[in-house]
Image (tube, rainbow, N blue to C red):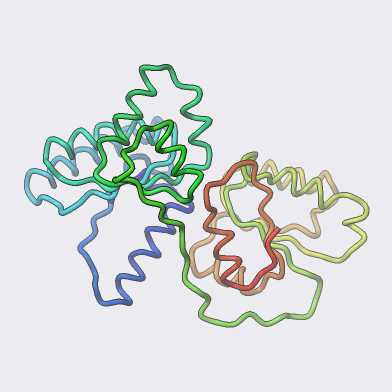
Length: 273
């Protein structure tokens, strides 16, 4: 399994797959190779070169049955091109999964030469998975993916281990995701600061990494400091606890594919806004 190795929905999808394989007793041998990591772009260079080196060694010494290549956009796409070249040279089939929420915008801004490189990447895959019918139409029309290799595979999440019980106190709102513009964090805070909203009791938990400090300052400036808690990034167990305790899930994103956090909230029986 090859991807950027960053926090977020792609990582959680991979974790859910591994957990389900373990529960079913049909556990394939999975090796994860990261091409980016959590640090700065400058720090990611050695990670990228090391990832390509590991992949080259595996292809030469212990040839995998398949390469599962998770793709988002921008740098993720360009990092994937050498992976595809290595896989083709080693005659290893590639399953390419597109997880991006803004891939249309990304490809619309490319030069003809770069767009053709992206199309080559998708056409070279033995199978391409997208999250919905709209993305399937885009993959066929814009990326020129052969129809017989294209599959719609929606995201899925497990159900909660415990049934949610309503705790006393004000309604609890929950935001899960990267804190920043694309997920609409500022929009959420501004909406909650409206007088007609402030007139009601509620508390908001913002769980995720990204521009946390800037938005914490915004919350203070809007007079929401005593109602909004910023937790930073949470692991799977802590996310499950927050979902179990919440009443309403809020995600005012500007763009999404099929957000895993929304599915997790629905699985826990939350109202989703």
